[in-house]
Amino acid sequence: MSDDFDVIIIGTGAGGGTLAHTLAPTGKRILLLERGTFLTKELDNWQAGPVFVDGRYISPDTWYNGDGTPFQPQVHYFVGGATKMYGAALYRLRPEDFGELKHVDGVSPAWPVSYEDFEPWYTKAEWLYQVHGAHGEDPSEGAWSRQYPWPAVSHAPRIQQISDALAQAGYHPFHAPCGILLDEADRPASTCIRCAWCDGYPCMVHAKSDAEVIAVRPLLGLPNVTLMLNAEVVRLETDPSGRRVTGVVVDRGGDGKEEVYRGDIVVLAAGAANTAKILLRSASDAHPAGLANGSDQVGRNYMFHNSKAVSGFGEEDNDTVYQKTLGVNDFYLAGGDRPWPLGNIQMLGKSNAGAMKGEEPHLTKLVPHWSLDEAAKHAVDFWLTTEDLPKPGNRVTLDRDGQIHLNYEHSNESEAADLYGELRKILNHVGLAKHHVLHKSFYMSMNIPLAACAHQAGTCRFGADPATSVLDVNCKAHEVDNLYVADTSFFPSIGAVNPGLTAIANGIRVGEHIANRLGASSGFSAVPPAQRTPPGTPVSPVTRPS
Ligand SMILES: Cc1cc2nc3c(=O)[nH]c(=O)nc-3n(C[C@H](O)[C@H](O)[C@H](O)COP(=O)(O)OP(=O)(O)OC[C@H]3O[C@@H](n4cnc5c(N)ncnc54)[C@H](O)[C@@H]3O)c2cc1C
Image 1 (cartoon, protein in one colour):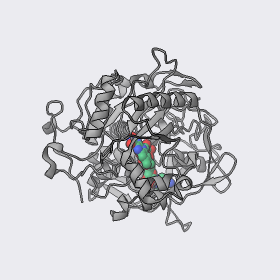
Image 2 (cartoon, rainbow, N blue to C red):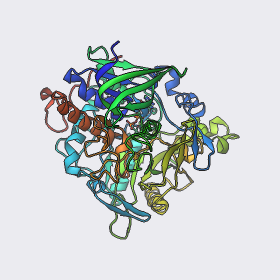
Image 3 (cartoon, rainbow, N blue to C red):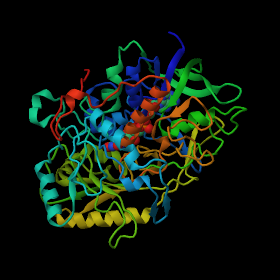
Image 4 (cartoon, rainbow, N blue to C red):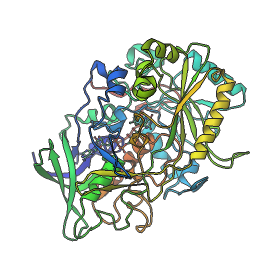
């Protein structure tokens, strides 16, 4: 195999996988370097025990917190990255998130682009990832140029009941945007079975719109795309001036033997913590503090959301299987008697006894499985998200052995508490607080909040000023002419909705920019002419390789 490529992309997740998909039609020679392998389709995909108790799909990495205590981060090294496990709740940021927003603990800074600038790529992302939803229902959303490609996923009866009760009480519930490959009007043609395992589990039938299924698999077999597995990028080399990346150094198999690949353009998309790690490990005479780190911003401003999973238990059974169809953004922004923005309320995948055991091993150790099953039968499960702020001291650094240390302090705790207060009022309205309510403040983290890095972002923010940002507006490193970053590292602030769709939209945006730079049109269209149908009309699902 030649070791010279037009573009080398490091990481195949939401950012990197989508960018590769965007660039592939140019015919340019693309090398995709992925640290992991394909995630095996197996029965364990849908078993709470292997997934939550044994952590079967979590990397064995050890990271260290601010005081040096080791922990196992919830990171997933597979083709598709974190999207293999994600809940596919594919939200746009609100227009206000692109501006400066005042919070109780400080300011969430403005992006160098506006929501209106970004909107075309949100639309492309929604169409590429086959998102189901109903633009126009949620009063907090921004303008949209096209309706979702698929109608919203219908609520299960219990969730419809809750939605109706909320509307009657004056709230504005909406159908949540879901990235699943489902055709409710023509069930036999679809593969999604609306199971309970969309959130936190890999999809055994490949019916979740993850980056492997949607973006990477369709490229397999293309003559201009090479996917290399078990290829961990350890550092980047530059020419003596430091202005050009000349080599991508790969460790294949962890035996310390290194291979070097060359590309005219190099795109880092290894996830916010690992992208910072690679840059910091690439220090040289020209970049003594780490590659592209003259601003001292690489690794700083780490964010991951201030989140709570909450289960309300009612008298009624909740026999919902696919629960993620409802959202409430009534508290997203400040207003009325709310001085601060509080965040987003959405549904979690349906809880079950196995997941409860995995997430709360200490609390549930002595509780028999049947009694947890009984509790889960009545549970309705919510997910609350409050924005956390990009603090410079919340940062990834490396020790002498090149291991990740993550220093992090929460922000906006009182906003998160107020959002929980609002949810308690909601639960009262829908008869879910009569018995008890359980909540925990993090996500799939085995009681180590810092390990819950599902929504990690911010370590290489983009901006107009090289003194305060790592990347320019096109996500090219200010200090390096051929290096781009296309994962959630680029976020200057994180808003209070899930980051996946924004990472995907940006992958398309940066991919199109690189195609132009290479003198090629990407030829990529997430909305092919044949699919330009009236709003809400279903279109054919993308080809799904087995
Ligand atoms: C359990 C869970 C639930 C989630 N639910 C949602 C949700 O419902 N909605 C939503 O919007 N978001 C959700 N997310 C978050 C979402 O998945 C991430 O925000 C998104 O995948 C981030 O994209 P990325 O490109 O930055 O990183 P990733 O998608 O993680 O991709 C990084 C890639 O880089 C590879 N890699 C890492 N290091 C190296 C290296 N050194 N060399 C080569 N390759 C490397 C990784 O293996 C991976 O393929 C969830 C995440 C998790 C874990």
